[in-house]
Length: 239
Image (cartoon, rainbow, N blue to C red; front, side):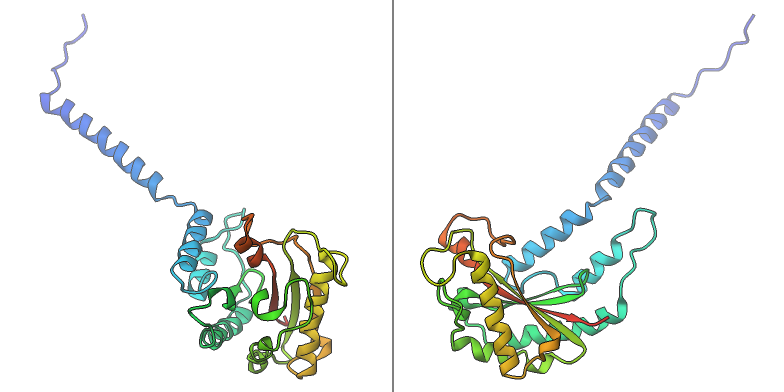
């Protein structure tokens, strides 16, 4: 005959239920604390742009997100810290230099400066409104002073890439047969000006035309097309 066991105290059932609920709460909290780093980074960048604090992430923000990223084997992602240390003060100086000349009442003429610590480069974006007339590749005179602002920041230790962009609409009339020719001619015009003014040396600069292959806006509006018509000047420290 089986030996009878004493019944469990009534409080034991309540205690077991409470422990189960606490376990469920901690599991829920842990799952909520696992943030999608890429989505969070995109959110921070979007808010930074919307609030008018510049284009792209700040060096401190980029450094934070880079430090949280892991490679597939779980080891910390390697960074080129000496180059990053050189880029950060250069970026901050360029932000101040071009911010002082930007007209708050003319956002379409704003020159954006951004940094990419993964590609180890700084981008200075010139909108078409201050650099070229529609469909043409002759630099406007008002862009000369803006390009001259780059002079203190370009040394023999960096290389320069000038990239011309257009919108998706076909070129009609004029001397250019396609957006490829137009974007390449605009990049070359900026390079020639930089060389003529002795801001860069011919050996450290190149001109690239990419037509409409790298849009920054997909809006099928005049404002969207205008954002895509631009010239980007990339400052890349030599490794």
